[in-house]
Image (tube, rainbow, N blue to C red; front, side):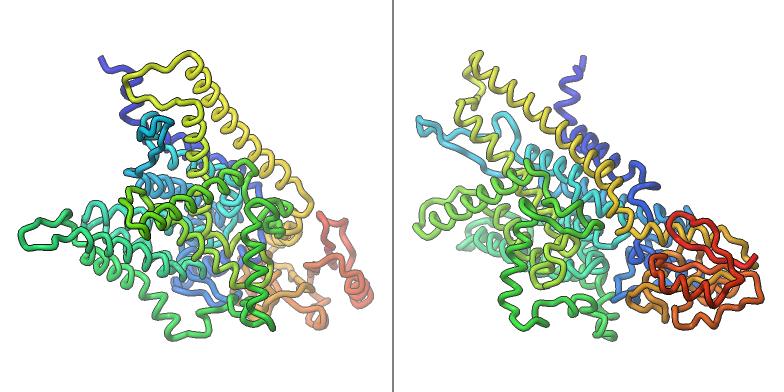
Length: 580
């Protein structure tokens, strides 16, 4: 008879990832229709482009408005809008979908990276003892890293906002998972999947364009290791039948084909290639080296000292990592540095080198490369979105840190067990205490994230304004107004012009479906600037609303020019003028 214990042991990985995904789904979809409130114009323009694509059938590779955005995410949002209608949450569930699946890809990547990791220590007797005796190292690091990611405010926040950057860690995790797997298995299908995921990554966000630097390292390392394993004489057989150079050529070819549409677009529209990045680059400052140093210091400090102060990106300038996870992150960085240093010392002294160093070099290179999208800019640093490619290596470091500290605990209390000796009562008590502590930490992390996001963040006054909730209420009001009445929205707020109208109007346009000129005419919606109030037709039944109701001078001007218009009791925080 098969026992439940045996079933659990055989399906350990599946059970773990399901439990973590349940936590991840909860944090990414709970109250998604309510939190965050409102709809920021940068999200709204995605929705407007998506609605326009649905009506015209023109789904673009790149949408040039608002400093330019790759089209993949917007086109997927169009599918969501087709199903659910033009609601803010319909834009955001796409982010939730990518955020949740990132946890799965992340778990697979970390487990693949450390599946055969050689993690040994020496007891006082100088006897080599394997840490994996109790816990398979790859499974341990993958489990804790994935849990940290699932409960990370940083990742949860962008999984609930309609920004395309959330796709970066998704395609990075799956792309490099398949890449590492194909080097191990040599399967053609895996190489094809590698090329598809990495190629699609170039259709996501500017930060992904630096990924080739990581690919060069991984491919170069694997090619070097493969070359070393080849026979030195014709009488010897190669140690592996996998043709690494063939794998590299195949996945790069697939990557090139998949990324070709966006590459071809930029080739024909070079002005769109850098877009917003060129405006905030350190190279546009008087002292680029100084700005680069400052950006690096602030970016490195964002994990444990001071995070992004933009309320849409982070809560109240708090560090991007929950403080215990931040400590584990530092422990993981220290551990990786120590392994790399020992490997380098052994290599230079030509000592037999049994250290598994590739995983540490890999995540270290990844971390340094994906810092560049943030550190090469000078505005809004630290910047949680530009640093979004760091999410994967940061939480791998945190998982490694937890493994390293647990290893130290086992070493100190001699809790290694080789299957022959029994643990005494004292050892069992320490192990039981460790298990209880880990369980307490898991509960503590979940409760802290829930409290921070769903209570502190959602109820904070800055959150209300940073997500343009006032504009959202105006959009709802205008959408519910009779079609035959003229509706004038005075855009008395600054922003990048999109089709001649400042960006803040995008929120109202999305909710009223009035982005296109033809839609505005059908619904009698007019977007005008403060200086052209003469365009308002007094003879027809009309409604006038200001996007910024705090402009008292403009309110007074409207009262004087249109005395026949009465002011309705304020709906939320905006003025409503009407002549009927």
